[in-house]
Length: 114
Image (tube, rainbow, N blue to C red; front, side, top):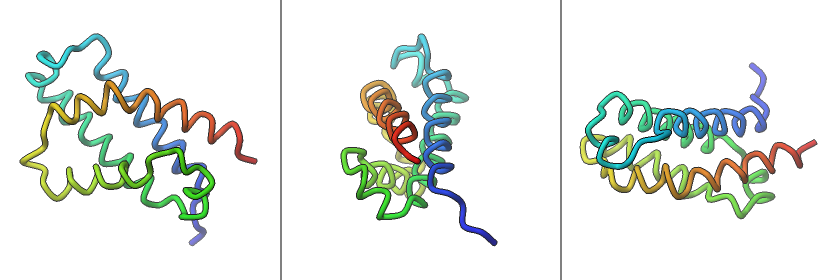
């Protein structure tokens, strides 16, 4: 079995970020917290983001230290191991404040990579 190229994991993260942005487009927090389907979709994609990031080598992460790899994986761990206590305000804050910057970082990583 061949090891998957790290760029594919970055593309996975980017795809999930874009899905989350699409799912939450035009929503405010009040509507988000009442929409179970959107919550489930967003949380699932945050988990996938963390799983993909976990599979990117430390060498690659070291080349792109401005990307918050540890926070990304840590969020996944908090969601997976404490699913029933997910704080939707924190999830919403991440979606609206952190994912747009992450999207830009990931696009740059893919542009710069050979």
